[in-house]
Image (cartoon, rainbow, N blue to C red; front, side):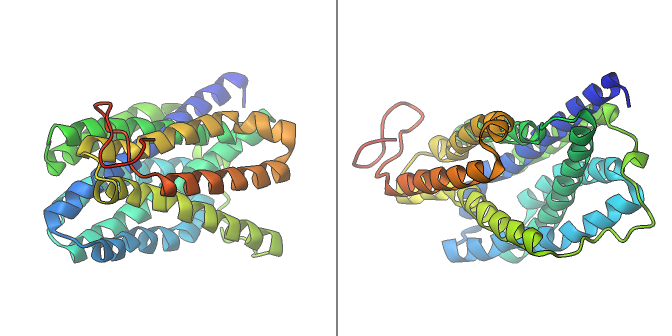
Amino acid sequence: MNEASLRAARLSVVAVFFLHGVVFSTWVSRIPAIQEALGLKPAVLGLALLGVALGSVPALPVTGVLISRYGSRPVMIWSSYAFCFSLIGLALAPSAPLLTLALVFYGAAAGVMDVSMNSHGAVIEGSMGKPIMASFHAFFSLGGMAGAAVGGLIAKFGVPVFAHFAGASVVFAAATAASVGGMLPASIDRVPHQSGFAKLTRPLLALGVLSFCFLLSEGAVADWTAIYLRDALRANAGTAALGYAVFSAMMTLGRFLGDWLTAKMGPLRLLRAGSVLATCGLSWALLASAPRNSHGGTSGGGSGI
């Protein structure tokens, strides 16, 4: 592989990571509207949101098999389209059970896309011989910030969820088609004679536990920030939807610094420091008494954040 093909592939994967973040945060930004439209109590909504895990967790090991057989490029492309159009099912769901079913499909598509784009990115990183993976994830966060910000504005103007999600799905699918041309060929990581399942070792299990903790925290912020801001802190619809955008902005900054910090501190020290910082940040958010609304004031009593 020459340098030009690696640069093109890197740009394509950057675009896919960005799109993944945009699609994800588009859904997150309208959770309060969907909850209100279906009349879901928090406990019922929480059960429905388990559909994402029910779809994504089984999809993760299957993705390894698909990549081994077909290569990460086609798996990433087709799962990206599925993820984009999964938004329509979420908007059309008329009840909690059907919303759960739509979230299972959404979660499965997200999981396959997530693993395959990381796999393709790892191939590029190995070929370039320098750490670049954190920068890929930074563009996911940047996409999350963009999608949440746009979703907040759309929610503020009262645009129906179906119109929002249907239009967004078409735009995101078109952007996917325009972004994937530079990816490396499928043969680059296709190994059809391997099973695609990795042996579960103690270090791998430890990393899995840590990943579970980090993703649980991130998922809680994504799924519940808008509702928490609206119901507990009495934020308006625009501010509630923008909550995840603020989270994504700081996550973007951390990820853009991630490769440099890894080189400076080493992965273990960075892991410890990042864990402490995340714990402090989440605690601070939970202790806040009122949000700062998008028009500049605060809602409710106490000081804004």
